[in-house]
View 1 (cartoon, rainbow, N blue to C red):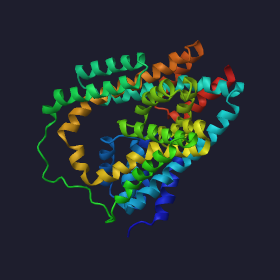
View 2: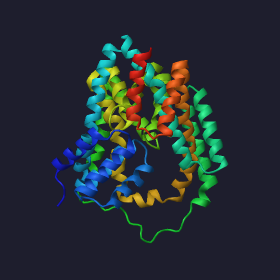
View 3: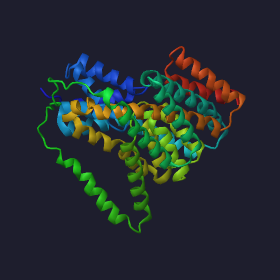
View 4: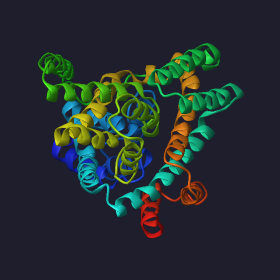
Length: 393
């Protein structure tokens, strides 16, 4: 029997509330609960979802949840699953945002985040190193990673970031295309979903966006909501590679471009995203809250997660063609090292932007050591660094 919507909501609510540690932690909990315990899917179904999410933009974890929800309950199942898995992170980030803007200037809060900042930089560096070990295989990719990192670090324009991605993608296509061509599999089949319901309803948000655009003219409140929607949905649809990829792009847009946040506030938002369960993309909730309170937070959260969740549903039937395409494979061989370089540059920006003191250098070094050498979960490192800041500073 097809699982009920109640089952999907309660299952993913629990997963969303306990998935500390990012993408793989969440996927592991889906595997444990949905596949091994409840036997509602096969392990191969989860792998199909991961394969599809890896070649689509946006938060990979939420895209996998959308895929699984769609397999189990059609478009309604996907909606319920995504809402449930995001609800704990959204509510916790909402509470943290309120406390931050109410009490952010008190010494204890400042000391707490002074300890967190270098720890966040260390986590970002560790992610860049781990991704590099898996994705960078030759000299051209090394050059791409270093050059993109340097350019993004010194550039203050988001257009530079887009140009780097475009150039690296084109380079990847021409340089790696021949080596990426593999014989077509005779067994490749599109994903079969358990729902025969139409998904044309998913075009309704486009209609809503058009209506909002008309109504927003001359209304300051609606204008800011329209800007939030367009900004965060655009970021979501243009970011490939998972959560940490969004950090340099978001920084360029909301700090350097829009001036919505100071550099310190942005880093604090990333840190709070680290200490909440679920995807780091939930940092958008913090930004939306500052701009327009609760409704701004809700708008930013929906805008950054919904577009790629919808895209995942549309692409679910064709995942084999997408994931095994020689063109996509070649382009990503150029894009991945560029993205890794950008991730590393985000760590440098955090360190340089807030000043490198002896305390910050020590926290950075210790955090990097325990994460990479002793494999300590970042969810423990972040609060420990914050408490150290309170005790020492």
